[in-house]
Image (cartoon, rainbow, N blue to C red; front, side, top):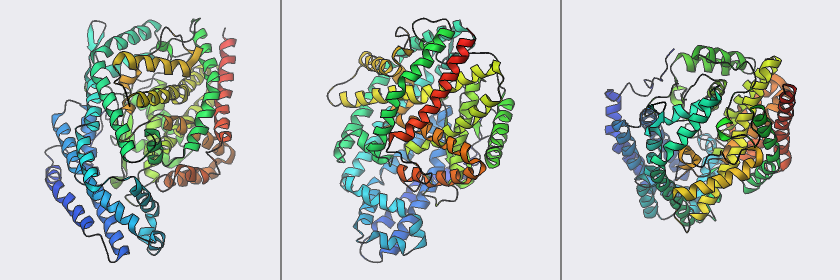
Length: 587
């Protein structure tokens, strides 16, 4: 089994004639699109709309292939100069079409009876949602020249600051047992069975951050300053409101979600205190033991064992999911292990043209790593469910982006817990609750942190010490007495890449949304059985062509009310009660 992914479906390397040709053709492809936009105006509106969408389809596929190849190369080697140069060239080139994209949106908005024109043609009808979004977005556009300048400046501003954070955190050297290691490796040791190793790794991790904290702080400050500026220029009341519009989600839904989460936080603290007591701590759980394995039967997995574990647990739910997982393992979709220069964490990137996704993980052999694979392959399944859509109907907003992935976590952990003996159940429940604590409790702290940083950045520059204070305050508000206040993580803002995109802010609440939405969907699956699976596929397909609330309505769910979120959280409460009971039984 390959340990690293193969990108041959994109290009076979930098010397691939197709890659060399496409990089050379990049300016010409952009010019072709610009000519189509320049031709828009009075005349056959239906014909012009069709020509515009065809041109967008062609350019999108061309750019997607190039950008995906180079971005994936860069993600496993941040020192790859050719990848960095190529990504920069693509960003520069795409920055030049922002003016044209704005003109295209204004043309769409200018059509007097747009719905009637859309309804008159099957091809346009497939793009109804996209076209109506373009019409609405036109209200927040700047002048064509301003859009052009903003896009070009972003390449050497927001995007560059984000690249800096990725580079610094993937290359910083961590001192460990007389040697140098990577941040990804040292963070994986948080799952080690040895308590001494976990604490020492936590201390080594915190000791490494000051080496890069100042530079990363400049990145964070400037990215959030840019976000504030762009939101103001576009006429949004705040960065959060701009993000909600991009997320196709209402403030009412976000408020209902966060209200339910805030009221449930004391239950997570009960779990954390119980785990702390089980590990011999009296003042709450120290950060370095958040991921400590608990109970008996903690299993180490080889890649082959991880493959079999996933396939066997998902085949009963959806055979096509299991088959896709086999394909991912057997055909080098996945880059598994950490190594110097490789990006930390995990992600999945889809390539619909070839029915393939690419998954990056930093596999450490623990159950949590297998769950991470299930999570990322959930994204891959989501991508596969979109394959029947038109090429431009394959992108979905942040909140539903984590639905399929978190649903996968729920499926595999529920099956594993149900199959476990008494000796294994405590370990599995702890693993599940640990993941949910991250998806909801820690995400709430990140939401508080980013809200505070965005607001303060309007008037102040935030140096590392101040950012540490804000992070610690957010963690205390979220975790409360569940964690030992002497052992928190002030530098969590440095290592989380989710903060470092000028165009994708507040990439935190979607994880809580996804976790609780997935739990609610899983409850429907348990009630309905196999008949639910086609509905689930249809729901995933709808995520690219409908707002979040409308997607949920396909399953009979009202996201704007706390009732749905409360029911999903109540399912977690049942696991917490079982966990505490098992801990007390074991003394």
